[in-house]
Amino acid sequence: MSATPDSTFANPKQRIADLERQLAEREAALAEAREQQAATAEVLQVINSSPGDLAPVFDAILEKAHTLCGAVQGAMFLFDGEPEAFNSRMRAGYRAADNPLTQALLAGEPFNHVVDVALRDDPIARAAVELAGAHTVLAVALRKGKLLLGQIVAGRREVRPFTNEQIALLQNFATQAVIAMENARLIAETREALEQQTATAEVLQVINSSPGDLAPVFEAMLEKATRLCEAVFGLMTTYDGAQYHNVATHGVGHELAEHMRAPIHPDPESALGRIERGEDLVLLDDIADTDLYRKGDPRLRAIVDLGGAHSYATVALRKDRKLLGSITVYRQEVRPFTDKQIALLQNFAAQAVIAMENARLITETRDALNSRLRPLRSWVSSIHRPEISHLCSTRYWRRRTRFVASTAASYSCTTASISGRSRHTACLKR
Image 1: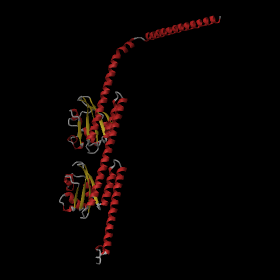
Image 2: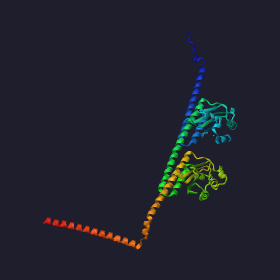
Image 3: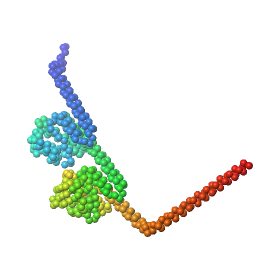
Image 4: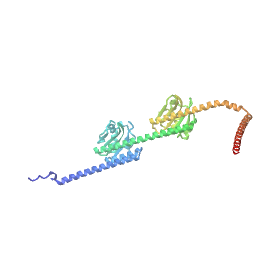
């Protein structure tokens, strides 16, 4: 019986073409995998070489992600818990809940793939189409646990959906971005903690080296507080029960410093007025946007018009609820202070109170000692100088006489002892 031709070899040219096509596909997939691995390694290298600096990391991630995913547009946004014409609008920021592309991420989805944003009816989608020419858009969440940190967005100017492999690749870059952000956060927190500990130790050293002298303590304290709270200038006051007095300034211009020399009788609605009424902390986002400034309060006018201040934080100095003064730090932009910075400012305020209490105790001790020594000094001053000279002379010669007599007696005993030994020696010789 003759053998039936094998169907595998029925059309050898077609079979060879299929094998060549499969080989080309596998080579392309292998080249793509190698390219992705190389891109991942390069991003990791940027992360390692830029500890704490996220800008070059984000730039590298976006460049690699959009090149490998075949996207011509894209951006990375960070959320704060709530990102040319189109670019300006994105940089100005927006509420995440107002953006349909982001709403799915807020709901917990790992990504949102929109095949054609032109079919969406919302202002941001229309801006993306009309101003940037975007159609297919992919947004991938940057997430740490359940916390949404931001998103990476890739866009195409044609309707061409992203493949599953490209979506997975963008998710991998998102994971790298989260790792870089966490590393930067830990480095920043470690650096901040070290700077705060160093500043606290330096202030304590100034307190120990300047007992009773508050001027260098206040200056060192205000300099550290202003710098670590990322403020431009600061003021420290003491309170005498009726008015405030500026005792230290840092970063204050000459014209404003001259204006701050006079005692302060604060308006009840001002920060110092509220501190005077019992508040321990007063925060304001923008001084220029207050009724008190608009009414022409001289102090606020000077601080804004001469110092360029906007946001500020004021902390009271209190000892057992008694008001001793205040510390205030100012920024020249509208940027509220963080909880950590407020806590740091309160810590410096506590140190200032300790220094003031130490100075008070030293002064009281010195006054008490002077009070006890005053009668003795009065008695000494009442004695005439000739009498003091006579007493000193008499005491001197009495001590001198006792010393000479003692030395002579010792010399006589030694001589007698030597003479006795000589007689004994002579006796033995005979």
